[in-house]
Length: 202
Image (cartoon, rainbow, N blue to C red; front, side, top):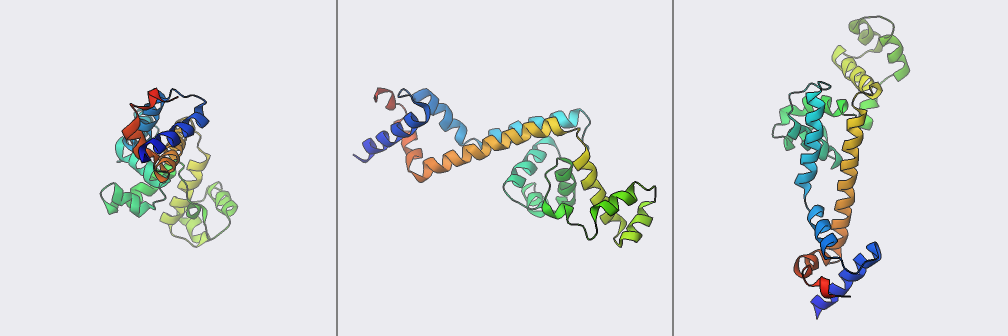
């Protein structure tokens, strides 16, 4: 009795979405896609390989780890947490530089103890990094980090690739939202059990 109710709920849901009643094949496709996070990571890794092969990006992180970095960033992890995902907390600085190169910025990246325009003016002045850092009251290494952020923000080289990555990640977010909705309604289990039977329901 409970299963029949689930069938009806499932049919109503997909009929509302697709305006179709013959939904076994489309549903199977959606159901398989909803749970394949590995496929998302592989797709991002392929784009990363393109970037590296074109010589646009130099890092010691291989494509798969860069894909893990992207996914972890979208999951809200900080650089240290992302480094742990990659298997080595000591990679946090490498993660931070790669993240900025991929324009995966955080608010903290732009939180400078001085006016950004002042730093940009000094960088364009021809002064050495040591002179600029002394004038701004920060270390040369911190100045280089801020300069890196600004340079990557301005650099459009990776933009076409990054747009593709954003599309993949937006698809992932939509997928997870759909999966969560199905799970919360108890319909994910119904998909597994009743896929083969729903073709006969009209």
